[in-house]
Length: 179
Figure 1 (tube, rainbow, N blue to C red):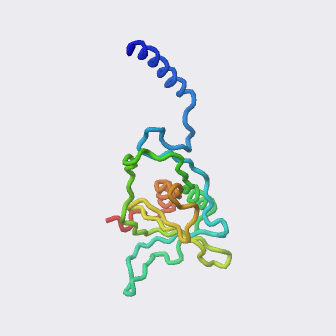
Figure 2: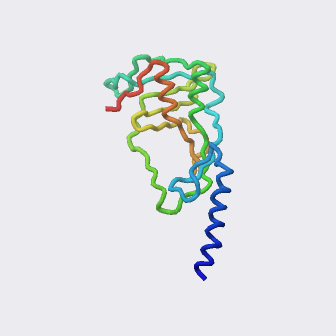
Figure 3: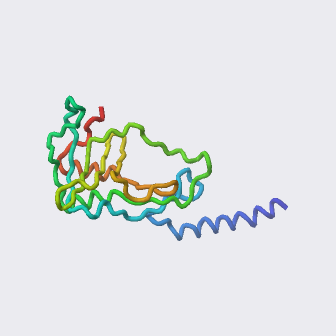
């Protein structure tokens, strides 16, 4: 009886596996069922769209006696429209569609987050209306005020490698404070 069942199920499983190859997963989806990572859907994200300009300030000189950050370029460097587009393309809204089985989700995050790169979003009057702080040492970013949806099943995903490439293309250091 078991041999007969095996001969029926094995071809059916093989057919299922081969047929599955005809429908590759979309590029914006996460690992398949059974993976130890969650299944995630990504969508575009607007980063402070009301801002008229963005500047990058690099905290590269330590702190003064009062504990304030010191910058070699206190006014920062203004991003071109193309640089702003590249920077903002590095962020996307992530929505968890399916979680891995309990105990299999082993992703961790660094605890350091001591950012040295600050992308300030300015309004027409030159006031800072938003900031994205980036730490290349621990590969994290934080928004102030927060953007996107943040809850148990949603978060903002960042492509730190793309941001690092952008900063390097601007001729600025990315290894500040990564002792």
